[in-house]
Amino acid sequence: MPSARSTSSQAFTRARRILVGGVNSPVRAFAAVKGRPPFITRGKGAHLTDQDGRRYLDYVMSWGPLIHGHAPAGLTRALTAAAAKGTSFGAPTILETTLAEHVCALIPSIEKLRFVNSGTEATMSAIRVARAATKRDKILKFKGCYHGHTDSLLVDAGSGALTLGIPSSPGVPKGVASDTLVANYNDLDSVKHLFRTHRQQIAAVIVEPIAGNMGVVLPASGFLEGLRELCNQNDSLLIFDEVISGFRVSKGGAQSLLDVHPDLTCLGKIIGGGLPVGAYGGAAEFMSLVAPMGEVYQAGTLSGNPLAMTAGLWSLKRLSNVLYRRLSRMSGRLTTGLTKAAKDSGVDVQVNSAGSLLTPFFTAKPVNDYHSAVGANTKKYAAFFHAMLGQGIYPPPSQFEAWFLSGAHTDQDVEHTIKASQKAMRAAKRA
Ligand SMILES: *Cc1c(COP(=O)(O)O)cnc(C)c1O
Image 1 (cartoon, protein in one colour):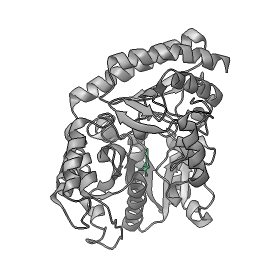
Image 2 (cartoon, helix red, strand yellow):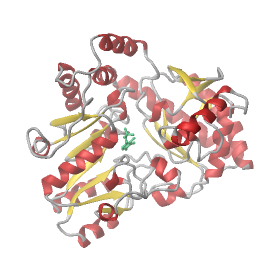
Image 3 (cartoon, protein in one colour):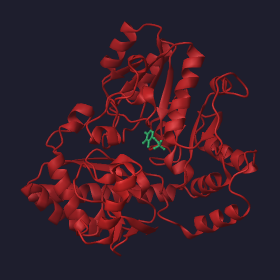
């Protein structure tokens, strides 16, 4: 943690006078782990540097987008060239079509798509399409899944909402919230029950096919297949929120890895290569309902702007099986290393991982849903976190978030992290 006299600390004090909580997205404020966040001046590869000149090995990677690391030289050059030609026209460019063609080639369930500026916009718009397509109002989501901060999805939500203990936000109208039904992740019976009690009323089921926002939670075998079947039986749409898992767990996202295919897919994070981008898409039948083809209205002043499209294209073009194999190998090694470090210190930890995502949960019990996730000991996580930060390693400042590896991380980085975790686990043991 930066000392009270450090410039990061001064920066936080100054920020808190004028920015809500000193930040523009809640988890950044370190509320869950206490302490004050380092203020970052630059990122390069797998590392961050803060205002005090301290260097950190980064496992947040801007919460997922930076699969190729911070500021890859080629991307910086591409962005500079794009910026020189103009940052936004409010008129079509061929870059949008090219990126869309790339996305559709990687994720075949997407026949047509629309670019937006964030994951939140993507899920919000996908839900609107599903409601219009089915002429129904209710949607079904899962406890602990996070789909951005749109009203109808801020019910029993994960990520920062879960971290701060406000999974169902004040300010969401009762009427809106009552159209959101909540089931338990990995529990098909809870879904069947809701389909029975709200017959012909559910427009869509929205799910993170690999959950990343209550920490990493994997879908149990048959869970996603069961959702697909229930949606088919009830004429509801299945929406995969692949804002994290898309291009992360494989080139084609969780849907290609697990071979279950949704009607609509929401994308974000990696698709923008570190710039603000989201997208939603799916079967042409549904996407054709969106204006100007159809009457479902959705628009964006900066949507598809050339800088964002350039960063997305650069990033997607560099996804390769070699990269995914490397990421899996490093995350496998980190999973084993963290598990062993915990065991050696006598701390109960379960590490869940999927490709380059992982979460060490400080609990003795397997974590497979919201209930088991919140059983984790957040005090121990906080102690672990600060002991890691003190050794120049930056894990997510919350128990309920995923760690992200990137192509810029190396085997040596991972070994260094495991070594540091031995000391950090001892700190957790004492907490
Ligand atoms: C991050 C995230 C979102 C929201 O994306 P923003 O770009 O932050 O609005 C939605 N769904 C999932 C699964 C996410 O991880």
